[in-house]
Image (tube, rainbow, N blue to C red; front, side, top):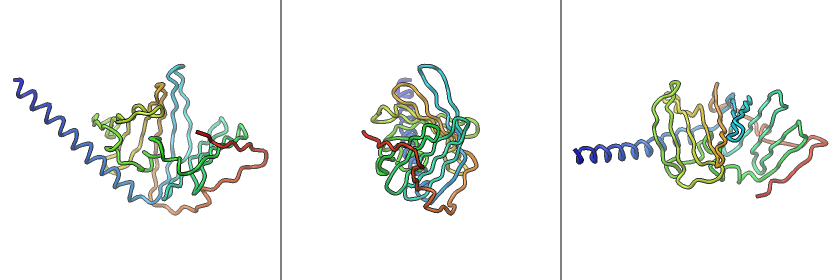
Length: 211
């Protein structure tokens, strides 16, 4: 019995390793081939301490190499986040403030952008676990091999037919959640570079992002 149990565990281990390697490569190859995309998005932020959640709707646009426009337009006044060719702009019009950083830093950490734009080979950074299907999507748990404060655990929900991520949840060190749900995804569309440029309006305070 012990031998059978041990052999079963070995099979599970190797099947898990094969899944992680195969899925990671499929994920990487699929997003590597995408030149641009646009999608509606719903972002859900949850606070572990207070138990409160905040939901924001908007659009995300991506164009290679590494250009991103993420615009939330809701009753709070919205937020505009742009990764341009040289700079990253995070603009809060209701507060009349914009934070500016360097584009090369936008994909440096294990953040939401790296997942949604396919800028990572998952098996290199994570241990992957197939948790079956949920709402028609494959649910995959990602445990970072080297956790950092921004990401200690994550899940993604993957559409087998389109081979695209439609939902992503990231948990930080404090247990706070950052979830993104995508819909109406359009691939390889024509996008002008001006979408990824930003000039601060008059009266807006410009604050540099410091590490």
